[in-house]
Amino acid sequence: MPVAVGLRPDWDAKRVRAAAQEAKDADQARRLLAIAAAYEGRDRTTAAKLGAMDPQRLRDWVRRFNAQGPQGRKGRRD
Image (cartoon, rainbow, N blue to C red; front, top):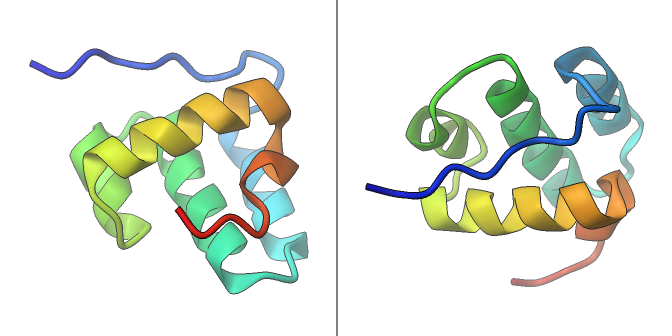
């Protein structure tokens, strides 16, 4: 059973979606939309599919988002 990663309490789905709309990089926007889906209560597998990624990758991205905010995923190729 995968270990859940909590989301930042100072953000919510609406705010993350707004950041995705402002993103100039399509990959960053896609990552943020997957994180927004997690904020909306979707399970990791479903949220990952919405972002065209696997659940482990989403978990990694959520960790970086929690540490660095939406800019933490910008321009990364992993």
